[in-house]
Image (tube, rainbow, N blue to C red; front, top):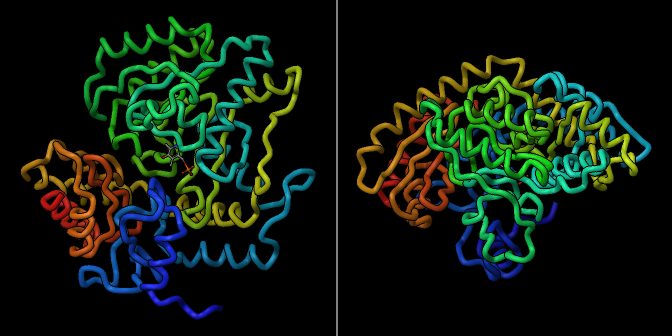
Amino acid sequence: MPEPLPADVLLDLDRQHVWHPYGPMPGRQEPLVVASASGVRLRLAAPAEGRTELVDGMSSWWSAIHGYRHPVLDEAAHAQLDRMSHVMFGGLTHEPAVRLAARLVEITPEPLQHVFLADSGSVSVEVALKMCLQYWRSLGRPGKRRLLTWRGGYHGDTWQPMSVCDPDGGMHHLWSGVLQEQVFADAPPPGFDAEPSAAYTAHLRGLIARHAHELAAVVVEPVVQGAGGMAFHSPAYLRVLREACDEHDVLLVLDEIATGFGRTGRLFAAGHAGIAPDVMCVGKALTGGYVSLAAALCTSRVAEGISRGEVPVLAHGPTFMGNPFAAAVANASLDVLLAQDWATEVKRIEAGLRDGLAPAAALPGVRDVRVLGAIGVVQLDHPVDIDAATRAAVRAGVWLRPFRDLIYTMPPYVTGDEDVARVCEAIRAAAAAG
Ligand SMILES: *Cc1c(COP(=O)(O)O)cnc(C)c1O
């Protein structure tokens, strides 16, 4: 092992050479240096705002549902390293990937039978959309090549997913002439429990009917729109989409990359609506936040359609497809998740977030407070001062990463009640500061 770099040297090299998410070059903000992490705590290499340990309110972008250094996941990772970290998936197969695929088929809605293992969420969305486009091509209907989604979504940062991200939040104006122009419905009316709007339902149905001849698929995030604005909507709209898609011969893709594996209180958010998509993407929490892995699952109808086409294969095959190391950790993460009463843990966190965030509604500048499953959101009536809000949270001993007008948490499911309360306190402090 090389000697650790002194923090000032490391930060200097970081600023000069290392891109960070959505960052300029050279870097503008000074990131915190994390030396290690365990349970729900990040340990910093140097104190920040007097803190050397932070409770992670973000689950590392919603993925570390069991916290860090979980003994079962660590053990699975070590054991797989001792066998093989990677082997190509073309012409070869292995137990970790096969077990994972079978497991995913078992726990997702019944019609989903076939699994494409991809290396990141964005790639799984690319694959899902390629499946849909190729399905219609195979059936001799190449005109069905556009996608419909609703505003306020986020599906990843590669090109095809970008084209179905929110046109404003996704900066489509920057990419006009480059991004494929998709069909956008209005954002779904807010509120998980809100009575479904007849006008909005008619809007969705009308748009799908009008564009059906050119639509390959409707693609949306079910129930919670994550990085597009942390908005919740009624599951009833998913049933509307399912019905309209069936009626007009359009495929339905649900992107469960943020919502999958219990985050919203159901194992998959589609469960709130009791529907099954034709194609579904999972990622983020799939490996418990240990390593990048995602999957696109599809029905037999889609798979058979593709496989009967002029080019009867799905033309996609990433180098690290089915990576055994990632698959072994994912299997361990699913073991841990499903062996416990995860729904009760998520409910416990939901109750803690409701209690702890309710007082934020009275703060000046707060527009909305909402909680669903292990997701807590405070929305301001102005853009968050990210620096000030982050510092206020760190002072309170918590790691948060606000964006736009949103200060939110998606804590690990193992976060204890006291730490949930601390996260809420930090969100309130951040809202007051930002
Ligand atoms: C994060 C996310 C993606 C992209 O996943 P990456 O692993 O970052 O490529 C796609 N869709 C949704 C809903 C997401 O939350």
